[in-house]
Amino acid sequence: MSTPTTNGEAVVTSNPALTIYVGNLDQRVTDGMLNEIFSTIGPVTSVKIMTMRRHGPYGAVNYGFVEFADRTVAEAALLQMNRRKIFNYEIKVNWAQPGQGTQVKEDTASHFHVFVGDLSPDINDEMLSKAFSAFTTMSDAHVMWDAVSGNSRGFGFVAFRDKTDAEQAIATMNGEWLGARAIRCNWATQKGQTATPPPQPGQQLPYEVVVQQTPAYVTTVYVGNLPPTTSQADLMQYFERFGYVVEVKLQAERGFAFVKMNTHENAANALVQLQNMSINGRQAKLSWGKDRPQPG
Image (tube, rainbow, N blue to C red; front, top):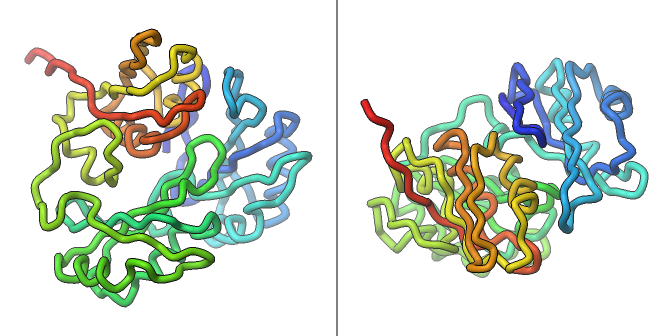
């Protein structure tokens, strides 16, 4: 797995299935300290803390990655360490990459995706999956997480191989209680639509749909609805969590920017995770930008 640092370089971990993300870290926490804390669960292979030196609402906390020698130890760390308080902050623990709850993730690009909203903060991928497990063709379930704080963003997506199961899930589960809240279920795309929907700023779609909306050579994300006080550092703080940022073209006075990532996949991941994220008090509206194909 390759994870970004704040200077644009990448920290490579050998096995993403053994690596967890640790968010909301007090700036006094060091690599050694985090290693010592997580070693109480089991053998730790490596620890890397990403230092955030940016302006904005999350400037006071860092995040990091912990790789374990054994899968069962990593799973135990998820259960035991999430919400543990270190200094003045309650840490947030999740898999370092979405979908790492299973060793092999099925390609769900052609499946039928259901949006699930109003999720309780404590609902994770496993709980969402169990809630929809009665529908036998369910292929994936994941909660969307805040890239910086590690908190749930209150919604997720469930994919189904069979359209009928997706329709029944919407009809059956909409308004049902999951945890402390009644959830909302609807199509992630237009009902019955199998073609890739056109990119629209602010439209919340799953990664499997977004990554196919534009050709693979497109690596630029449009970011709209920005306040005039937005700086390049503000945008870097959010986007570099998903990979190396090649360039930021900011038109703050006009309320938008274009952020070019190093790969199409990293750009798609950023677009999905940061959609409607509050940046300096406004909900950012993201969509694909435009790039020209490389000659030859």
